Image 1 (cartoon, helix red, strand yellow):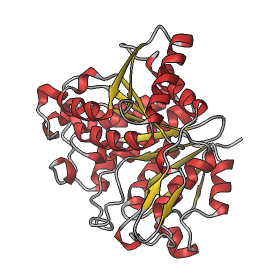
Image 2 (cartoon, rainbow, N blue to C red):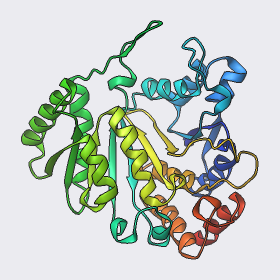
Image 3 (cartoon, one colour):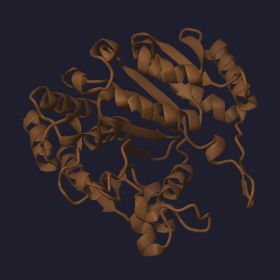
Length: 347
């Protein structure tokens, strides 16, 4: 039975970086069936909604979903009655039960000097941010009047346990086997429940893993002053959104970070962390490397093809070692030239 992948080009540079990624996918999985759907702003323009029922159904039936980028100023609005591209992302995560977002952060030696932080600070950084994806303030009840607004932040023990388990299991596969649980337990009741639940699970099932608790403001400072102190970071939705984007800058460019969103038995969603970059869309200069690295995560976590995933990651590393630099990395390489460099490194 052929492998089925749904692709969502989305908006801005999305189609430009997804196309070469699909070519790479077919190289690694020759029998793959690729089904493309409109998503985000493109779907709003065509259907009036960021995620249609047909697209969600196709994603549910696939082996994995590969998403490029969504959003742009064209669809920015504060009008709650108008659709936004990001609603498609939230709906897709909820609809597929994707409660765990994994963002590996490993600055490459070839790009140490591209980071805004000094080489001696980032050298040796190798961390994983595990973000809870379907709970918290993003999904809580929302109210708004002319003069007030509110967003409910709510978590259950079950939601906390399953994301903490994801982090502990990931840490068991690292050299340091260490989890930093990030919360705001000095202020928030949700964080107090979070910490209590993480501690109980740790004591019951994962005492072999080192656990520490870090307040979110301290974690933000430590990420830019001492990132090598982290191994696996686990945190709730809002904190994880902010901290993972902050961690992206350790690599020198947010254009370098991939992500995987996983749930239970259903398909995972794999996407680069960066946005749709509408200012450079259509120019052929977008950095496709985070898209390629997201494809590597799809091969690893979505299709259980570890050797193929490692080969693609090594090819990206080699291309950078050999001097590949796109504009966001201080160079002049186009999307096509970056793709050709990775293909050459694959051999």
